[in-house]
Image (cartoon, rainbow over all chains, first blue to last red; front, side, top):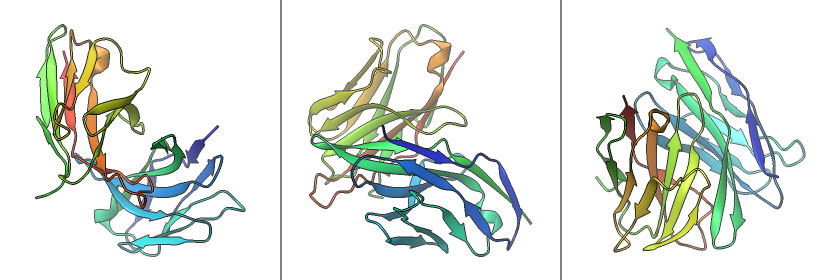
Length: 114
Length: 116
């Protein structure tokens, strides 16, 4: 079946540290991969996406590369800020009938200390 | 603002009462989704509309839950005889019906339900 596994949180870092949040997946077919972010008290926002192998999604200094050989989509940022504190969700979508099935990871809480 | 909007943002109710949430999707989006999210978890799919047709319902959606999208625009999610276990954030999302759609969803800010 389809599933997403991401590293457990919380992840606590100091400002300007390097960030990696691991995400691996299992899927039939060729999924699209997403990172969504949820800031405190807000809904989910798409952070970045990649639709095929070796694609790199990037936004707001965050990057993730679709690695089919390792079935991974790890999120990275070179220098985090306090404002990056949020919960990050890895997700994949696979076509199903006339729709897409979205499979979500459990989320990783990121805490950035000044 | 042309994003997905949800109302109310917060609802506190007593066990046994009925509650209704409203979602206004992005206007050109044909697809509308309801999810439920509890603390520390990812979103759980509840139901999905394409235009006014409800095409998919999760087993999580008990008989106490009903969703409508009567004119293919806004949607409502009603929970009857609420239970404490219904306390959660209810998220609405929309997406375009396009061959270019890759499953990306546009979420509202959610409606938080607390059942006392």
